[in-house]
Structure formats: structure tokens, C-alpha cells
Image 1 (cartoon, rainbow, N blue to C red):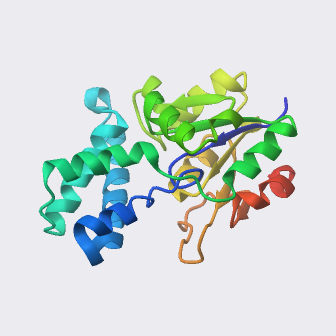
Image 2 (cartoon, one colour):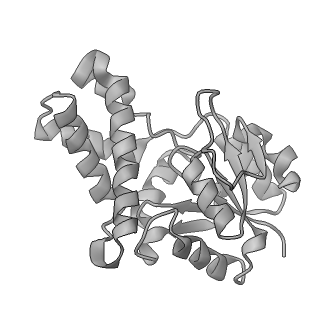
Length: 227
């Protein structure tokens, strides 16, 4: 089978810190710190729910809202409910990274199936991809909601492989900027490409390593066969 490409969405295709400009109008100089804490807690809450298992799954928007509340309390920014509503709505209008559209267009023209593979809900992913005008390059959306867990739970990667690669994990290639996601994919028998967007991002010192590391999706076309 031809390689099946699974793209993480938030952090890889879409910039989750695209809310900083809006945050600056609300919390001033704390905007960058607020955005980072919000994102970190959002991921932490997905990890916790995946680890707890059973009926503890809640969709990504619940984790996002809880993380927003935590950041507001932790940084003592005293956001109003109206401001929180605006920030949550902004998650549906986050921008794509600048090189994403051209990279996806090239891959699609080259015959690759590019899937959005995300912790987000189907509706949330579809909205943000459409707003960023990159949905046209995607073969479709795979949301963890159909599994009832979050990446990096092995069930998520297995379900994707069954649906889109006839159960053949080895032909699935994850493209992600999140080391935890790359590690989860490698542990599930996938190939994985890590997008290290800045030198400040370091990979976890685990036994699993990415097959290829790139600094931008603009490098993906020339490196895809190396994975």
C-alpha cells in the first residue's frame, strides 16, 4: 500500500497560539504566558482522561474550556464570561502555519491521502480547517471521539489504521509537532515525522524516536520517502 499520511492538527497544521493577539487585548503582557499555560493544561487534561479510561472521556472542547478556566485562575487575570466565550470561539478560527497550504497541495497532487488526525471533535476540526482554507487538501477527518479516548492511547492509532490502512500500521505515517504523539505512533508500529518548529522544542528522551525530523512542512515532500 501507498503511505497514508495522518496529520496532527493543533500545533502541526494549525497554530494553537493564534489567540495571542486577542489575549493581548484582554490580559496585556501576560498574553504569551496565558496562551502557553492554556495549551499545556489542555493537553494535560486529555492525558488524564485517557489514563483514567472508562467513561471519563469528554470531548476536546471540554478540556479546552477547563484549561482556559485554570489559566485564568492561575494567572489571576479575572476574565469575564464574555471574554472566555470570545476566546473559545477563537479556537474555531485559528490560523494555519504559513507553509501548510502549499505543502498539502503538493502532497495531494502527488497522490498522497492526507488525513486530519486529531484529539478535536469532528465539527471542531472541520471548522478550523475550513477557516484556514486547507480542508480542500484533506482526504477527511479522523477524530478520537469515535474511539472515546485521546492520543497517545494505542486504541486511537489502531482505529485509524483499521479504517484507512486496512489495519496495516506500518504504512501509516504520522506528521506531528507533538513529541507525545510521535512516541504514541511509534509505539503503535507507525512511521512518524516530527515537526520541530523551533530549536527550543526538544524531543522526550524515550526509547522511541521519530524516523525523520523537519523544521517546517515545507520540507515534507522531499523527506516523505525517508520515513
